[in-house]
Image 1 (cartoon, helix red, strand yellow):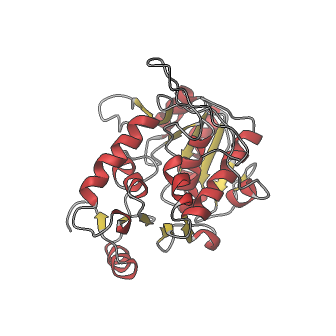
Image 2 (cartoon, one colour; image 1 turned 135 degrees about the horizontal axis):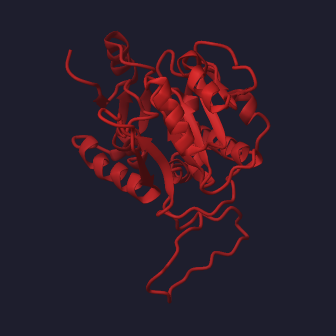
Length: 297
């Protein structure tokens, strides 16, 4: 997994404790679930957008190689914007290919993502912004009116807009501009499995939401563990094709449904929001093998 064929790989075969596996070729990093498949199945489709789940049609169907290269561009964009290990990114997004690629890409450079549920009350959003203290903010255009007042009270505007349902928010860049002309090569960064890569907030039904800090190791273990369930009955694990129209940005379900598809070498069909007709159409069109589908209707 070295970035160059001429680069030497130092293998520690003597240390028996306090080992730090934090190089690209031996670490546990959420984003590596995608990168490592570029070496075996680069042309297999990894992420497919159902209608409405991508802002740019160029991202509607991405192979593992294309997804990884897009994630690399996002990661370089984060580094070029001055973000590094442990810095936080707030995302106010529903499902899009761009949003999910952004979320995973942050892990490549040790940046921590904190996606917020856009349905939270304005005072709660303001409280969470104060807790997170983000260095960068990503917002879906159509969700901005819901959270604009809370961000205004906190004194922040978006840095990156995903152009779904609206134009670029004043003072921000589009996702396409953010990744434009960035390198598609893997960024060099130190990441360890014990590092936190995501802070997910609870719903806060009786108090303010609490931030659950998820590590790379816990996410990867959850993905591999649930992949065992989703791949039962399939001839090959890589035949797994998971469809979900439920939130993958700010819900813990993405660990066991979306990431598990990548852990098995399979693919994800990503819908924008629950819609019975769209779900049935995606199952038929994409030959879905597993569905995270909400309660029966």
